[in-house]
Image (cartoon, rainbow, N blue to C red; front, side, top):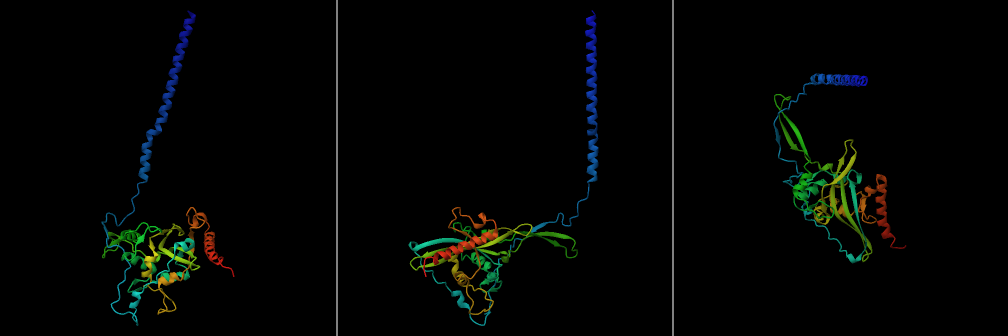
Length: 338
């Protein structure tokens, strides 16, 4: 009997302990929920503190129009009178001399080379001569662009001349991008009545580099080295936000043999004599009267990479280009003994 009483007391005591623990747990849960109940008020207060008026925009809800006239093409009007003291009409009848035929069986040595011309160098300043005559703008890049627009030559997307570009493709590269101009009220200049989206005019002077693809061939029949230019490409320079050069983009490639007749009809700027002593662009390229540096060669280049892709230092890359130039020169000279 005594043992049964003890068991009942223990059970009652255990139930009381469980009830106390359950009450404590409920109290803790309710204390944790109290800050959450006040949270919406805090958030509302924060939101109210951040309610700042937006900046005033005078052009808000202003209609936007688009100017479809496009950018300028750089075409020049011909003179309606003779603008010289002498007749220069014969220059439009010039034709370049045909190349000497080279047989593949006589090509004892051949190497393709890619060069870049920096038009900011002093020797290349004639390429940036900006003037106009009856043939249009005399800026060299404009001569190339006008030839493409007139259909005199075909523009290609690559240096192997496999993919022709349409006139629309070329115009997209010379569109210059979009710009938005505010049109203000004449009576109240602070009031914007419309916004006009226009195309920026492409500045041909922004083309600061040219790329040339050429092949050097030693002909054993004539026992001399020949160089034949295969293609010319204008190159755009891309800049980073800090003003440093980020890279280059080729606009298009032109096949040089197709371009020679056109270059023979356009004269090069001569700062010492603007008379008969002026040479044509075709003569300038054939006489190699330009400054350039080699960026790629087909010899010792199984991966077909440009020099800067495996030589990161720009000075060492220029020296490697000079090594390629000296290798071509030494090949011809080492064939003879004096």
